[in-house]
Amino acid sequence: MLRTEKIQAVDYIRGQFQRMSSAVFVDYAGLTVQHVSKLRDNLREKGVEYKVLKNKLVKYALKDESFVDSLGKFALRGMTAVAFSFEEPSAAARVLKDYRKENDKLKIKGGLLDGQLLDSRAVEDQLATLPSKDEARSHLLATMNAPAQTLLRLLNVPARDFVGVMAAKQRKDEGE
Image (cartoon, rainbow, N blue to C red):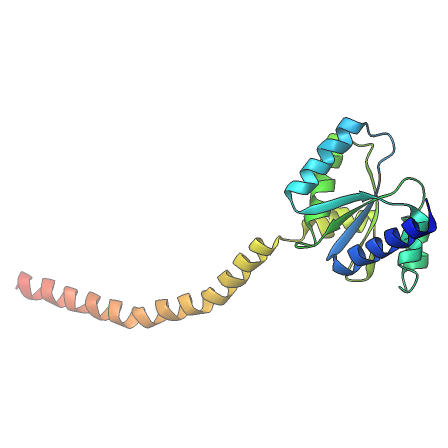
């Protein structure tokens, strides 16, 4: 790789890490081309970008970040690919976790979320289980609607009770 190509690659990698909401580092050793193609298709459906990157170029692109040394110790060793999530932070982790159920040769090395390093267990147990944006919105709306619905029910109780009393009086008057 020529020096100019390396500079362009480092700029590209730096840009990806600046744009991402989360990134998951994986070891794809042992996967066939068909398996990797299927994985890429699954990731692409969820809006996740999957790139095989050179460890040294990633380290150089992230040299100004405080976590680069820690990242280099556990995630930037051996064959490394990175799945970048730009919209939903949990999208890449969720797809990779599901894919690992089918093919255990894929190994999750770790992840990044808002500048915080996550080990492989945290990626699978925490990041992959985060609700999607739509799920989070629906939970928020349900939480916001609950007090209003309760208030409406409470406001209707006196009117309902009054109607019940009037109906009982009418039945009593008709019975006499």
